Image (tube, rainbow, N blue to C red; front, top):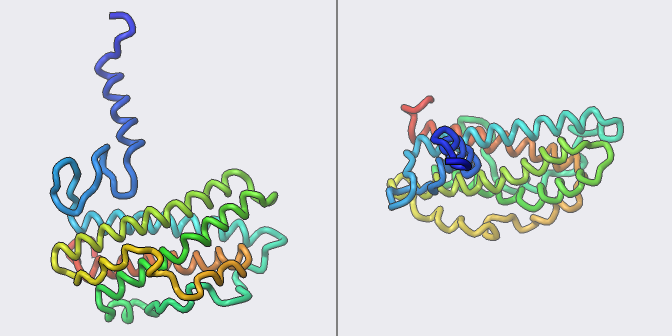
Length: 228
């Protein structure tokens, strides 16, 4: 019949649609859930960890790319010599792998979520700032926007991991109180407004590396049989 869509075309349209619908914790068009509710995909805890770790690695990679671009700008070559403390400095973060391994699982999960929430507004501001910066092209601006979006996506993913751990009895329900972003923000969370763009980027590069490492440590403590 003229104008009809053949089987191959239908399959291609479906594949494109599924690819478009997939997100950090998405598989196909159905949402991801931590339990086997109807109409959603239930992932194992190991798979959930793998997804957030891969996402955090991508996020940190983008921060590295933008950091390098800032470093080679004549007007921004002071990056790496941060003029003030990072706005997340008052969030206690374990120094080194051994100290992170000694932290309670709930506490380490809370540290990860605190860091991600603390970067929600600063990264939005950073993206808006370099969008009007003549030294950066559209590709760099898009990377900054992607980095900002990825923080939001990663926080949602870590919340899914925490929910799964609660359901399995691995951590206490106390982490459920972390669902409110405002509850996680440090008291002086607006300090980032006084920081320059290159200081913000330097600090985010540092913190995104911490998040990635803490997620790996948390995974290996809980599901060591999966790639640890």
